[in-house]
Length: 361
Image (cartoon, rainbow, N blue to C red; front, side):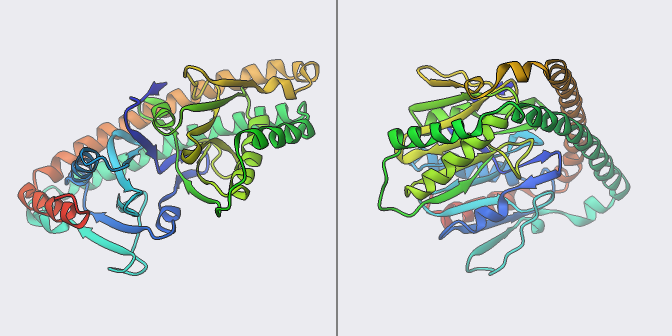
């Protein structure tokens, strides 16, 4: 488990999940008033470097800046979002291809293809195609391991659900939200981001983002996820009904039906799920052990099954990360061919144009 530094706002916007790659680039496009800048180019052609340059310039000006990291290489950026400007620039190539719906109106395509010397790259066609194929194969194998781990973790969640008192959970959420979320006259709205993902570095969790956006933390300790799933669903509904803008962070292992974290920047409040996959280490938290909502005697009957699932899932995710690391090495080799064929002077010119479009020059 790697935890990022706490002086920036970092998210993922896509990750390999048990159902394959899941991205939130389309929901970003549909956030109210959002203007999208879509970068198109090849691997190693300067997309991430351009976005890092833009992010640094925005941060130096004191603008709220969300850095969107690539789950296949967390040191690389897949995007930068400037909420104050309602603008985002993203890598719009595979596996998160984004095509403009209204070119020039809602989206601006920032093409870097003109920076590539196609003739020079063509000389290495066989090597490049072989590396693309090997990278895809390794990523596919990693995805199968993640899918297997996801099945085990889902089995554990269902086992816990058999022991949960969900009526007690609902009553608790009503009391909690009445206490910490006063009703407003506003209209609730939502951003979808990922705070964690399986990466070549293991399961990675941007805990520092919660520290950057909140100073009050309500942390639900839930080893198996059934109780926290309902808790966060109900809290999300209450927050939106009460008129807050929230950042909802789905579970990277089960993004379609489970929320792991909710951030409410207006209240400087974060609801976080704490478990072995993303342990929360923060000072002065309000910790809620989800066992308070369980029939512990009933859960004890599943103990051997739960322990097996946890150990096996951990080993599967470790293998998935190892395969993702191999895929990254393959991608790094692929980048060397592209870098040798790129005119980075032209990339710098494109970066300068982007800075001007974002009012950062």
